[in-house]
Image 1 (cartoon, rainbow, N blue to C red):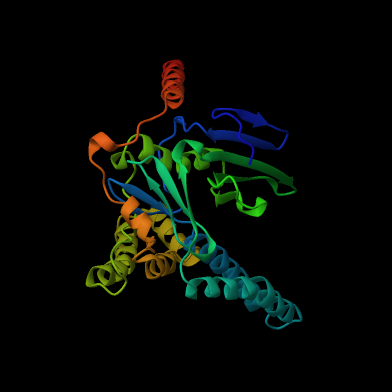
Image 2 (cartoon, rainbow, N blue to C red):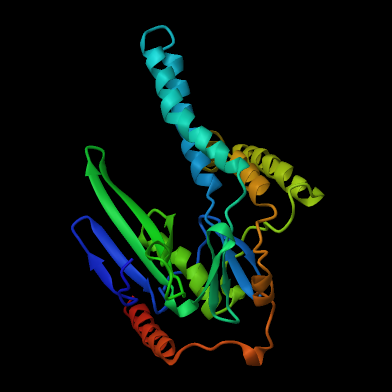
Amino acid sequence: MSRSEAGVRKKGVFSQQDYLAPLPIPTGKTPVDMLNIIWRKNDVFLDVGNFNVGGAVMVIWFMSLIFIVLGYHSRHDDLFYIAVIGAMVIIGIPTLVFIYNLIRPTPLPIRFNRQRREVCVPREDGEYWVVPWESVTAAASQHTAVSRAGPSTMGLLFISFDNPDPEADEDNKHFYWGFNCGGNEAAMALWECMRSYMEIGPHALPPGNDFEEGWGSLKQRGVIWGTCFDYAHSFWLHLRAAEIGQAASLIFGVFIFGSPIIYMLQHWKLCPPPDLTYPDIIEWSKPLPPEQWAKRSPELESAIMRREVELAAEAVQL
């Protein structure tokens, strides 16, 4: 990933790139964790994971419904066999990959330490990097494709880290994560979760998922069954009040996207989330006295002040 200055926007005919860091200046967006990437949060560090159960379930569930409907309506003609073969290829292979990822150990999160202003990046074979927070590169990338059905927009948030070892091999110098957010606005809101935590504090983030409790605990069992009950109860209340739109949205979420299944699998896989057990990182993750906290660089301090003035001017114009 190129290291363009934060705040730079590059636009093409069907694409747009917004560079968010370095230096990590405010985006002006409200932090939103729409992908459930925040796995653990406290006053010292933030654990961010990249294991999206919901996206996989929604795609597999929705495609399964399409092939079930297609197979039902073509059960008496030759199209039925085409539907079966198509389902085995289009749904079967991703389902096997998804199941394989579910039974594998959950990938370790990246840990952002706000007191030290550093980031721990786990790598293969027990290796890890500790990189300065202000060296992290982030960019929101958006691409638009046009077809007969109309334009469709896809967006990604890229976060890149550089190996602090100057003698590292060429294939071990850079590491990046990509988050499929849907568009640049969503990517900025997702990045703002990490930036706000590091620059403002944990109170700046929205309430997140409680992945600290284990799957076998009575609390989590109550949460899982309670979620299913809440869906049914909310549907009944909306139906009695003749709120057809709200009731339909619940049915849409349950039957079209499999919301309860997403919730259950997510908690089964991420309760509790994996932890970083490297001895040095356990010590690195302990709280420091306030007088020992790392400070912003003068360059970042100046860049944030300029950006806040720009955002204030934009708010006045609106």
